[in-house]
Amino acid sequence: MNRRHLLSLPAFALAPVPARALELHGSRIDLDVSDGLPPATKALLEPWLAKCAEAVAAYYGKFPVPRLNLRIRSVPGAGVRGGQAFPGDPPTIRARVGEGSTVKHLMSDDWVMVHEMIHLAFPWMNLQHNWMAEGIAVYVESIARVQAGHLQPEQIWRDFVMSMPKGLPRAGDGGLEQTQNWGRTYWGGALFCLFADLRIREETGGRYGLRDALRAINAKLDFRREHDFRETLAMGDAATGRKVLMTLYEEWGFAPVSPDLDRLWAELGVAMKNGEVSFDEAAPKAKLRTAITA
Image 1 (spheres, rainbow, N blue to C red):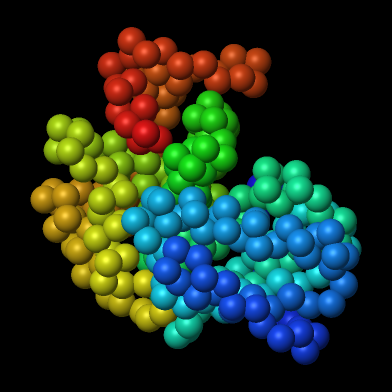
Image 2: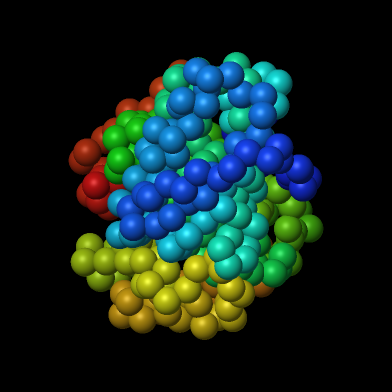
């Protein structure tokens, strides 16, 4: 499975296993697990969910919603085979976990659950704005996992260098609001978030970043309800004192913006050679890069 190609999960019936109520970071998670997972894998579920919730709560300053339904379906294979978040009060996350999953699969390799939990921190949006919801989930998942010690910075910057070009517009594409293919939605949205993070930090002298804007949004809104998109962005801008989100939205939402990524990586001090990333701390924007994952 492609790392960023989230599988769309059909509705599935769970065996009548009583839900377990987990208390994580002040929130209640009602966990339903279908039959089929061996005891050794079942024993990993709560530590895995706690680790993911901790990374998300650390980034946002709290777990995004007070209550969550979390449904785990057993499937053949190993690892997390897909996930999807559904709005509601409480919202629901459905995930498929392979029967052969080990500690490595869940505690080291998985990124899906953090990605889905991050969706909970942003209000439900219609498909036109899905690039923002998925872009936040892709970008913040990476940053939050580094900040939590799950990944090294080199790993996510390698991922960004390798994958963010997939978010650039192709011939005939429109802006992010107009072209909704997979690359533009996931990686185009992630590019928007990276540029927003950098611009906020530059305009505020490093006092604020994208996280401050997203925390302010989540202080009032979350995945339980839909909210006007422009009003949501304005809430984030109010927290930083700069209209970065709205300005970027006007620039990128309705026109095919294609930034020079090679120049950006050089300015940030990110170099790729033979598939490995190294950092140049003397690069002009190296301090911005390190601040993002600090």
